[in-house]
Image 1 (cartoon, rainbow, N blue to C red):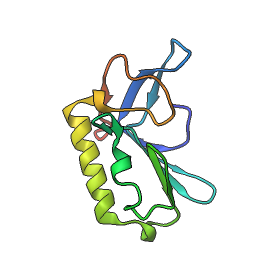
Image 2 (cartoon, one colour; image 1 turned 180 degrees about the vertical axis):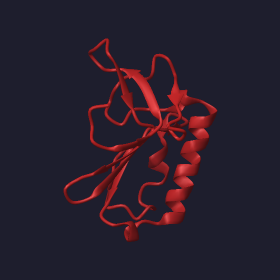
Image 3 (cartoon, rainbow, N blue to C red; image 1 turned 90 degrees about the vertical axis):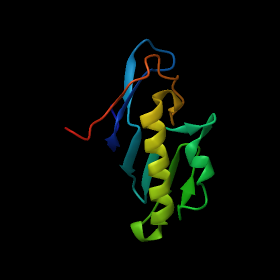
Amino acid sequence: MRFKMIGYGRLHYQAARSEEFVEWPAVGVALQKNYISVYLSASKKGAPLLESYSGTLGELRAGHNNFSFKAYEDLNVQRLASLFRKAEQIFDSDVRHCSLAHGGTKPLEPRLTDDRNG
């Protein structure tokens, strides 16, 4: 991965307009100049999982697969925990329900490696 972010899990997919395989985190957190962004690569019934939580997290702004906030105190921690629990269930049940926040193609070989153990 060529981005400066903390990531959990690894999604392997073929980049758009390329034959190169790229790694992207299942959940990523990036420090921006004025806020923190969280990227989530999970979908439910074909729609990004985050859409059903949008507007309830206390976020500054939200996209299809990402949201931003300025301070932890701004977040609805219970809703955020619910979102991450649901994402974990999706990843554990079937990695093919992952989508890519930046518009890449779906994984050719659905694999999710767990980085929790090093």
